[in-house]
Amino acid sequence: MATLLNTQTDQKILLRSLHLLGRHPGSCNTLLDNPEASRLHASILWNGFCWLIQDTSSNGTFVNNTVIGIGVKTSLKAGDNIQFGGLNTLSWIFSNDDAPKDMLLPINSSSSPIELEGVLVLPNEKSPEITLYQSSSNQWLCEDQKGIVELESGAKIITNNLSWYFIGTDSFDETIKSNQVNSKGLMPIKVDFTVSKNEEHVSLCIQFENQPIELRERTHHYLLLILARKRLQDYKSGIEDSEQGWIDKNLLSQQVGLDENHINILIYRFRKQLIKAHPSARTLLQIIERRRGELRFASTSVDINPE
Image (cartoon, rainbow, N blue to C red; front, side, top):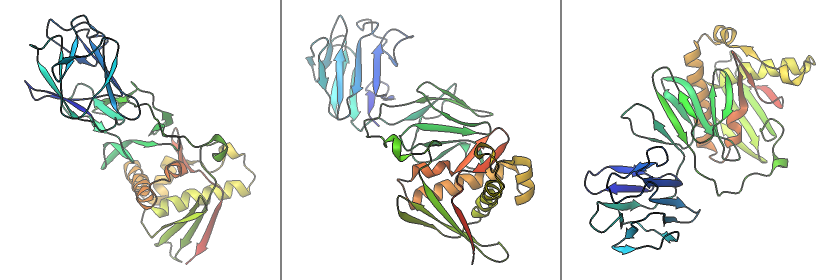
């Protein structure tokens, strides 16, 4: 990610897609403590192609010893030297010009920010209380035992012992057209399970965008099999769609012989396997749905075949 390096302290500042600098603690993302700086001195922003700096100060902003015009957006490149308020003030180095990334900023902790990519579980893979992943429209989703919510920049994420702020970037990618996704946000798919006679070996193939995603045998597929069977059973019984397939977590724990933490680990491993097999299939991460105290399989287009 793009960073500013404080040449005096070697502190690195991760830049948000719109990053404000100045002396006003309630408005600025990075505080400038030199008296020459204005309360809202300058902004650095990503325009989808490159980083720009804009001066809004009284005493000026300098890039490579040259003052930039007030209100004028000036492009930055890696290695540029920036000073806020005068040529005798502290220098900052624009040390990386990569595009911004969505991230988690720790609250009341010395931990480093977390760049978001793929599937992330919090606080860690051994105790996954919360899962973060992107929808097909690049919106980050936060899933916990209560269900799934879309994250907005500034949202607070809390586990038992730690907390973070979600900092989102503006997406310049073209989103999937609404008519490609059904009402639940899950693109039309077909899931084929292959199950051994003793049910100790379960593999599956997901037809996605007219292409098969072959997911070879894994222990976590048995959990998906139980959820899929329940969904099919309720579908054939004529139960209303919104109520099909839901299994109480305590009952599910009894069926698979695992506690809730281990079930969360299995779901995380499945999602990780899926993204590795087909990185663009982010929509399929929602194939397991949650609501308070319950889980279900998101599709009724399922075949279960003997090995």
